[in-house]
Image 1 (spheres, helix red, strand yellow):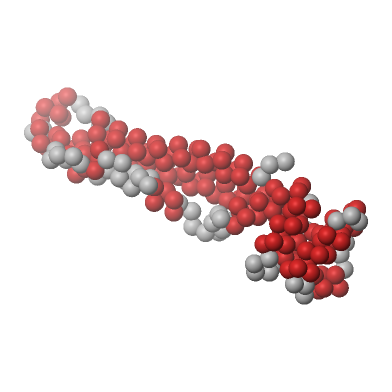
Image 2 (cartoon, one colour):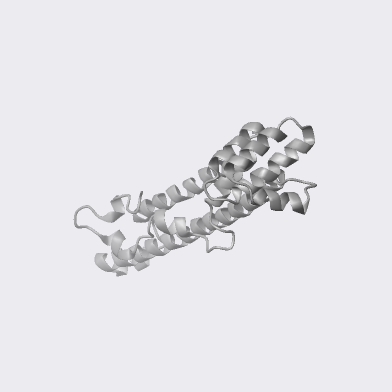
Length: 214
């Protein structure tokens, strides 16, 4: 069994990256967009005026394309958050002890790290009861600060829990499902070009640079 959260991040990450790259392709393509003009209308317009109208149409096209890609990006981001939240719930269920008494829980919460590790060692040869005891002690260690050695010891004794534990760490790195989505898009996607960007003729313009790339 592999980390479900890592699998989700890789799966969705490829598509999210592709959409970010598409935003730069749209920005570059806007300069070559050809709007709808009848030849009769084009002939009546001065070249400068025709250029401004075409630039405005190109900018409007780019805005529409950016909105489409951003909407897809946000939808995928939200979908990923929900999937990670479900994976986290499954991981916590796998890590949680069953059939433990209130007294056992209270006793575990009062133990020092060394006491927890000693108790884990004593429980390691007790079959199913020992497994649940180690899970209980692991749960207590996770609620303490700087009990990393106890956590590592539990995962050595119960290596099948490693992926579930890793899922809890990876899930903690992600935004809450209720947080506003789209922050990464705003940070890393290309800006939609304005008509002025498209009309630029003086030297190297940001249209030709990978602005905002990290």
